[in-house]
Amino acid sequence: MKRLVILLAVLGLLLPACGPKESKVEETAQKTEEQVTVEFKTPLPEATEARVVSTDTPVPPPPTRTPLPTSTPVPTPTPQPTSTPAPTTAGATEVPTPTVPPPTPTPPPLPSVTDITVEIPAGPFVMGSDTDGPEDKPAHEVDLPAFEIDKFEVTNADFAAFVETTGYVTDAEKDGKKSWRDSFGDGKESHPVVRVTWNDAVAYCTWLDKRLPSEAEWEKAARGPEGLRFPWGNEWDASKANVKDTGLRSTAVVGSFGAGASPYGVEDMVGNVWEWTADWYQAYPGNTAGDAYYGETCRVTRGGGWFDNEPQATTFNRNCADPDKTAIDELGFRCVRSK
Image (cartoon, rainbow, N blue to C red):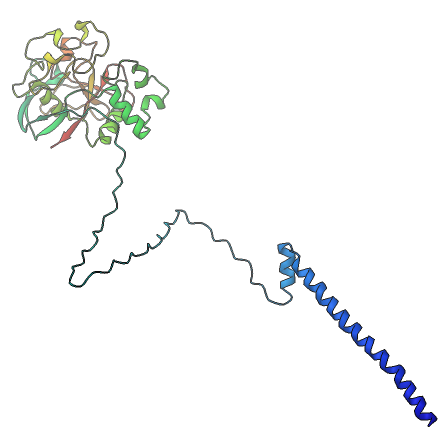
């Protein structure tokens, strides 16, 4: 009996000790869970957060940057939602909605240039002269197809429009010499452009899908089918062209001497400025006179300028100049177009 009492006493002491110990474990576990929850509610820097996640889930490697292509790819257009047609009543005919094509963009207009041409008909004419300079001989027949030639010489305003559009730099400007800009003062928009080389003239003509006239084309347009000595006839008249005897001593507005136009109506074919042609300075067939400039070093110039006299102002007089370097204040050009 005494032993039973002792045993019961021992058991009474042990039971209360087990209860609190279990509740402390639960309390500790609950606090630990709350601490973990609080830690993950706090935002982490990207690098730290990545390291925390990596303990459970493998993180894929960061994407490799793709280099951009040379040209920017055209974005794929977003498909537009298709509109649902309205319901039709019985027996009614559904009218399809017309498809309107997208408007075509209109390119900006080119700067305005003088593009008045005169048509020269096909056929033969007499070129050269048997009675003047040795380089003009012999007079010979040349048969040409039809073509169009500028009625006026190319003006400062025309050339300025070309330069503005293309950014072209003339040979004289590249060499640091006086250029067309130096002769293009206020009020000279309609004067012929000067100080341009043969190369500059070719560049301008090409821009307009034209070209320089051949020597034969130039002469036919100047003297007409009757083979005139001057564009207006066979007698010299300084009042019909801007030449030295006229006394201006400078270029004039193109077309200022309408009475001196050629039989085809082409103006300033003599006087005002010399004009570049397409051809090399060569001897005519049958010409036996030598000339140190014959060959492929000089291009033919025609018409005489504002400081020239009667012999240089004939329709058949020939001269020449270096196509790469010659850019003087009485040398310009006009263009032609093949038919």
